[in-house]
Amino acid sequence: SQKIEQNSEALNIQEGKTATLTCNYTNYSPAYLQWYRQDPGRGPVFLLLIRENEKEKRKERLKVTFDTTLKQSLFHITASQPADSATYLCALSNQAGTALIFGKGTTLSVSS
Amino acid sequence: DAGVIQSPRHEVTEMGQEVTLRCKPISGHDYLFWYRQTMMRGLELLIYFNNNVPIDDSGMPEDRFSAKMPNASFSTLKIQPSEPRDSAVYFCASSPLRGGETQYFGPGTRLLVL
Image (cartoon, rainbow over all chains, first blue to last red; front, side):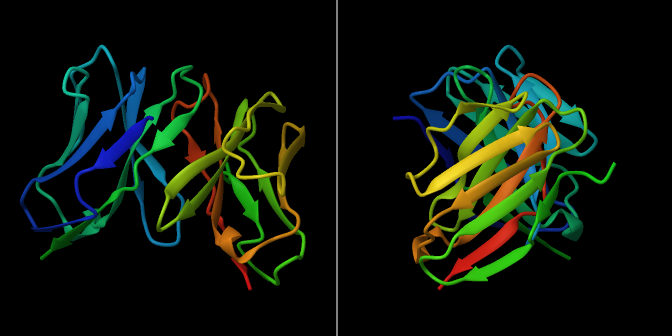
């Protein structure tokens, strides 16, 4: 069956460091992959989308890589700030490319 | 734009009661999605609509759950009868593009079934 795993439930880093979050999947060939941010008590907010034929995408301090051979995506936040503290969700398109399947998320805590 | 609107924001009910959750998608969005989020299972897709037509309801847990979209600006998710294991946060999301890309989520409805 299809499976999406985010490497850890929680990640603690110091301000200014680079946070790296991992998303692995099995039994799956998504057309694209997305990363969302979720703050407590709120709905997820879209951050970045990367397609299967793209290796890397950047947006300000965010960078996403997508390795379809390893079936893995890495999400990086450079120069992290306490305001980056949140839960980050990886989401893959279904086979038809019409819906998303979400990982359980990694909760990032950035301490000052 | 007000974004995706959900109501109520919180719902506490007793087992066996009917629960109706409501969603107003962003105007012009063709796709609407209903999700359920729990600590154990994360964010699960229940059902989604394209142009008011249900496309995939394979995530609906059982017959107690039903969803409708009578027009482009309104959708409901109904649970009848509700059970304690239905307690979760229910999110509605909409998308302007070919389904699934860049979804915009509502604030969610936190449901507690006693």
